[in-house]
Amino acid sequence: MKFVIFGANGAIGTLVMNEALKDGNEVVAYVRRENTITMEHTNLTVVVGDLQNESLIEDIVKDSDIVISALGPYMETTRKVTTTPISDGYEVIFRAMKKHQKKRFIALGTPTIQGKGDRKDFNNTFFPAILKLFFPVTHFKTKKMGRVISNSGLDWTLVRFLDPKGKHKNRPLNITLDGTTKKIQISREHIASFIYSAAKDNLYIQQMPTISHA
Image (cartoon, rainbow, N blue to C red; front, side, top):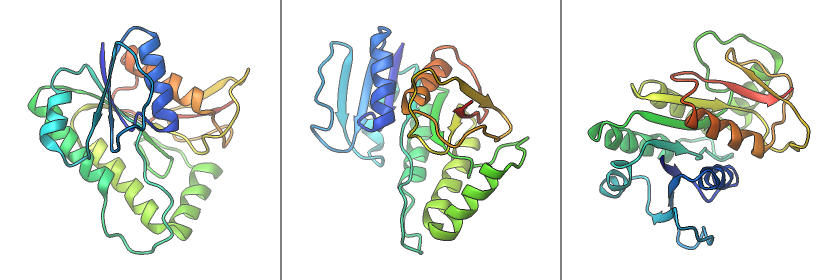
């Protein structure tokens, strides 16, 4: 299969890229700056561009099987929304995918993005409320990102988690489709493996699985 990974130079994106390459897939890594990916692999192509470069995005998407985004808004202390680069970039990506009849898209999110059938628990109520109170711009951008993905009409999957810092050794994975979590933390290795499995096996179509350590 041929993967296109946006944000492949990030902590989670790198792990997803490595899993895909290890399994014999082709990977196109789309990054904003040169020299952020230094590894070399016969099945890896690194493309440098921004999320508004529609012609370049079209060019890399047209031959893809799966498009993955490891992008996410950072914690902004400002109180005023000026731009929504990731959501706007997703609109560009989705136009390119639809033009070339590509359907499969997987992205990262948090419980701030609510899905149909979600149940309230402490974690998915408290932490989004804290985000909205102290980082309202990040909260707004996260919510908008979720709306753009869920309204895309594609075969999307939005993988939600809270705190990607946990250790992965001998820790079982908890997966829910109702937004609830067992723990707050989840290892980046677990997140990457989950994303790759969902991509490879075509799982969780138009769903928002929430993952955590059990």
